[in-house]
Length: 77
Image 1 (tube, rainbow, N blue to C red):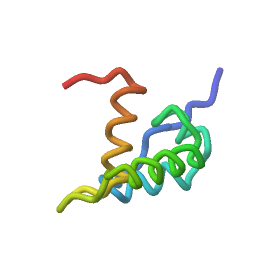
Image 2: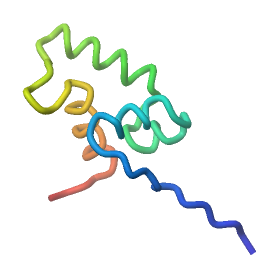
Image 3: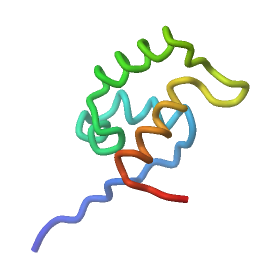
Image 4: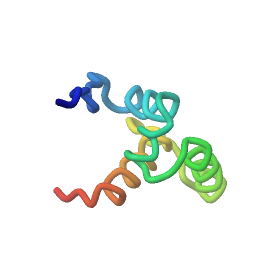
């Protein structure tokens, strides 16, 4: 018999979810974005220097997180 642990139990959305993933358990960031939080923050800084910026409703970090999540998960519409 194995113990079952709920993995995706966050009620947060948007920037709050991104923050939770980045600063939570390291494995969660790897699973969601395919990279460690340090690399995510480095990439965000590089993209920000190249023109990525917050939109009216979505932060640059959230934009990057959405992109990486879909690429990493192979998700579709």
